[in-house]
Length: 406
Image (tube, rainbow, N blue to C red):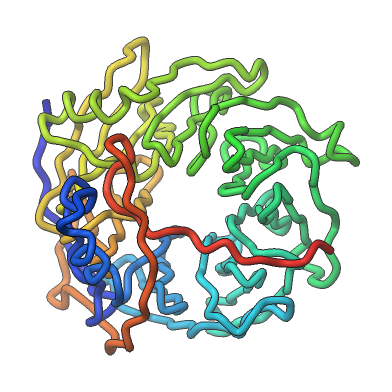
């Protein structure tokens, strides 16, 4: 059962035009509520993704705007409006898909569905570089010591590479390892920043040594997860394992070298999370490795906005519910990121356009000004998907931008 209940220490309202509160997944699956479900998902702003550095927090909104806050007082310090779409794309507004801080410089990098990769210099407060990729940019990872190598996951199984220090033509593209949208790419930041991990909707997770000259020699292992991959990351001692979260709300752990499953919770993932917390879990948000405690931390949530932080480590195969997070969000939690390596503080972002800070062991005085907000924007109609009994809450359908091969 849950060890501790938490309330948010501070909350940021990123927009006064949040999207409306969703109906539950069970109600949405019934024919009597299909019309109301559509109307509840028609408009408003929400937070798409979240990133944190040692002194700031950045979030991307569905409006196309990127906001940057200082961590100490949670004041809005910079705003980057929606950029122009990449040259190949249609005039339809692009959606930001990834937001990543460079590891050793005050630089924030984003990608969007138009194929644009934008580099934002936080010292100058402006976009300094904008690269137009030949296909939609669905995921982003920054590698090598300075984070200058950008790997961008795209549609049709492509992973593009570009050097942020010398923007221009691509360094190369992997085309044979995946056959469908590459939903996440990430480099190993713990001990090998040249090792790349990719996950895709074809159900495959690949490990690459990007120092090798060809895709074939770079590909070190392939894990066959069997269902569309949503999030992947390195975990375990010396980054020896991989965690994998899927669109079917399942969690599995894999060995990097042998590509064999260490643990596969499969369709029991949500039921085991629910049992550990004593509340019904609807979806898994994300996970991350805690190097201090040598545990995998897993964030999961409910359609009502409550969430639970779990730990998983040692010889136990069972989830331990560490914290129940209540009173912060009014809808689905979309992202989670630690603010410190020890995970003694972390931030969540939701479809209610809110950012919530959580501190299990507070050691500071909360400033008087508790929130920052921006003016509202016109609502934009967006499609929905209603899943089956194992699919968790209603999630917005990902737009698949059509692009010509290059």
